[in-house]
Length: 329
Image (cartoon, rainbow, N blue to C red; front, side, top):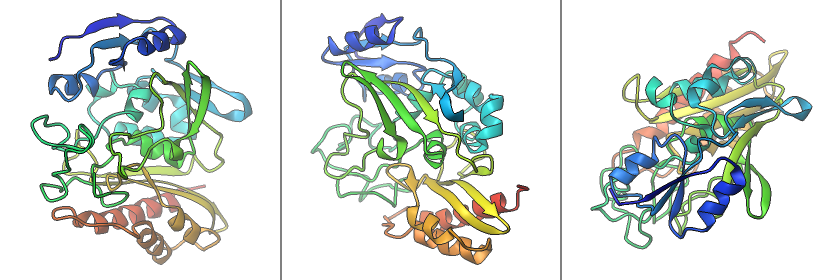
């Protein structure tokens, strides 16, 4: 592991100041991704700024009926929170489908949003990787790519976004709240993640030294009728091959509104806007759900090992929508 200086801060502005004063510094929260990558020599910070003492570890009510999940709220606390389970079940289900209880006890809300891909080549510092070293190449495109993305890829990167939580938060129209030396910023989560394009090293819109302080959830009227379905190689401690976070607003058997977001198949959490458009105003039905799923995978690009993901994702969306449509209002 690369030698580093360890610091900690007790106030957000001090944490930001410390980061801005160092050329190669990082924030440390739960460390469930960062420490692994430091051991693998993928991340080599000179300074690690521990932010666990910042007052960001609560779930609180905010005006107009919404809630704020502090950036340092542990994943396990968020998943088991009564307010999350009752108002936003899709989020609780998504968190509980990820990692292990031990990791969920350490991982944080902000850290989960920023977790790095599990692409084999990114995590192997002996291999080239445009995300890790821009311009070095993407061996996954012609290499082993079973777990990689089929949506949002580019000629420079096909790494899949690994977060379950971010998929659910996208379905809930969440806003990521940050602070920096320039003040506070509110970022709609669907604008938070960047497509790889020509610069896969940039995964989100955060500026250097910008700190996530929380995630705000509005009182989405039909969020109670939501569900997260994850398909993976084994039932525990595995990342999604395909997943779907769905919510439906149904009145008299007709879909008034919906949210469909896919995970495991995109370079970012993939909101299926066209699929949502197809559902709106239509009577609930399996054939309708199949049409929506087909639309959601429009433009998917298959690679050598991951073509199965296209059909898998469609079936995952259909099953998730069917499950939620059969729930009592």
